[in-house]
Image (cartoon, rainbow, N blue to C red; front, side):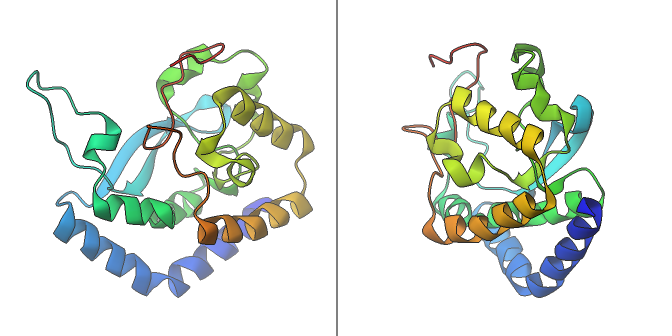
Length: 199
């Protein structure tokens, strides 16, 4: 039933939001450049890697040593707008159709975090990751890592079809209100270093 919901809603959204997806593509191409999409390997169900797609929101500017500048310095005006309304994530509906993402589930983080999770935190990979989730409607990036993981594990242990519908419904209001986009001075979240994050 969950997979059927994913496919049905993803197809309806892609068709219904096609004009917005096209406009977003043009905005990124004109204001940020090419490539339009950002592709990064992320852990999926049981930690199996897949490539997550997003519309680009940052430049590739580097410092004098050739290292990328911090996220908040590379985030463009267009990128802030896309993130504010979660437009950068629309293309992830393709990941949903491919079966790599669900509409609802713990957000897929970075591959290098896999070895840093406690056994309890690692439970977040017992279900397919999602575009939105329980943590996203309860603080998103404005909460600390430990609380985010607790919310993810709670979802894994309490999943139901009705809970997914509730999360999808509440996500609409969170996107409209543009809540929890960033964490302090960070464009999204500070780097997770395992245990209690003190970054």
